[in-house]
Amino acid sequence: MKKTRFYQKHLDANAKMVSFAGYEMPIQYPKGIIFEHNLVRNSVGMFDVSHMGEFEVRGKDALAFIQKITTNDASKLSPGKVQYSAMCYENGGIVDDLLVYCIEPDFWMLVVNGANIDKDWNWCLKNKEGFEVELYNATDDINLLAIQGPNSRATIQKIADIDLNPIEYYTFKMGKISGYDAIISRTGYTGELGFEFYFRGDTSVAEKIWDDVLEAGKEFGLEPVGLGCRDTLRLEKAYCLYGNDINETTNPIEAGLGWITKLNKGKFNGSDVLAKVKEDKPKRNLVGFVVTVDKFIPRQHYKIFADGKQIGEVTSGNLSPTLNKAIGLGYIEAAYKEPGTKIEIEARGKFFPAEVVKLPFVG
Image (cartoon, rainbow, N blue to C red; front, top):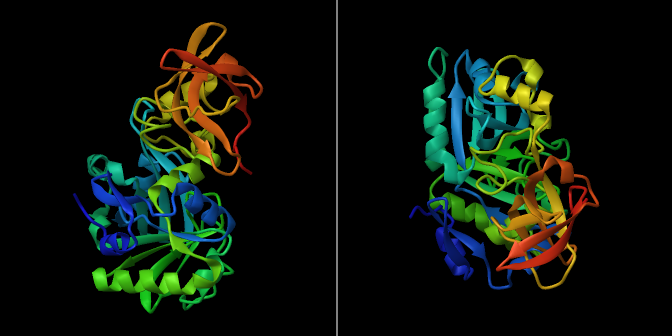
């Protein structure tokens, strides 16, 4: 099992550690997932997300290469801008969802999901033929902290050497955190105001920054938070999780990711298939639903029924701490996708009523 450079800090904070994406990662700390979730929604929390992968792309064909392998239009980016995107196979299935960073015109960074690092790296290598680019897998070099919540900016400003106010959503600046060079990025997967910073350095550097963030956020009650609340936070915003809501058997159109699939930018991997899916309209769609009874939480692979027949399957489900209701995402036949549609979730031979709702669950 790999360990991030914050591993000892997690142990010191009595985190419950689990195997995740080949790393030992904190799922939660002693106060629990609901406390951590509410802390991020209402104040500020700190995530170690160093298990994410970072690929550097350099060379005169860097943009052309990224245009081929990703679905969004990276030509819209200029240095200092970030884009949410996806990579697809030729059949339209999703390799991964990712962030694309334009650092300089000939220097880009792709940030991929931790569980997919090897697969994504091999896919990038396979696709670089014919492009004048150099690829470097910087994953093991880079530490990544996500400071998320309404008080995130006020926290980080104390230890940053640049003014954070001009950094708009999905943009970044180069600066220093606690005196160390970092990419300071206004991104995150919680739906709250938040920043992520990417920085190099050994365990002593990582631990110093960790301690400095804790000290800076003390007045706001900042605490480290784990992957458990990262999941409930992203689910409330209906953000897709790779391996649950999207994978190689799903395409971006049916997953509600048409907004990051720019079919008019020119050919890219899977573009012909995706254009046809869009034209024909998907046979199924990823929808959100709220369970309308107490004491039942839908889980991945539970079957979804309507009109006495199976119409789909749950991909993600959990209790929403904000709504205090069980919520979920799942693929269902397109005829049932409209908000207000009554459905049932089957579990252990019993059926539990639910209703399709407009996303996101929490505004």
